[in-house]
Amino acid sequence: MSCGLNANKNIIETSADLNELCNNLFNNEVQDENVIDIEFGLNNYKELFEELIMIFTEGMKILFGDIKKQVNLNNLSKEQFNLINRYFKSFGFKLEIIKIMNYNQKTEKILEIESINNTELYEYYININSNGRIFKIRFDKN
Image (cartoon, rainbow, N blue to C red):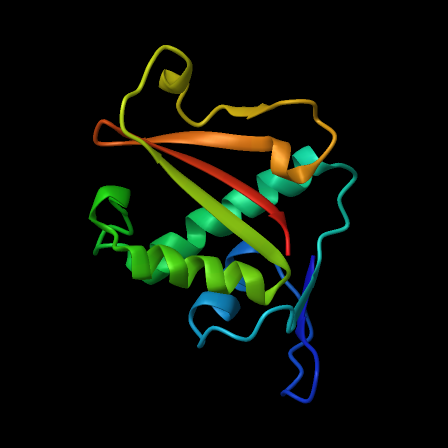
């Protein structure tokens, strides 16, 4: 995995592990759309989805985590969700977070990756239970 800023910005080239990548990304100001170049080098959309979920998780901890690096999604504002989405757009992905008010049998599968047809990135999603409210998370290319 490598990360770099392109355009006429200071170029940051690094072979990074996930923590280093997330620290470089989320401890700096959000960039414009598609300015940051991250090469994932993965074989399929499921692997890409899994990497994006890890980046999402680490980013949420960095941006909104408490002293224990825990995040309660229920306490986040629309502006905070928009901020994390802007970070993802800066490296070419859209983040979709859907609050599901009523949860049923299907949404009780917490942190299990599901997909519709396994053919496109946006078909993969994960349901996260945050104090009784379900948040459906998925990504798409920007």
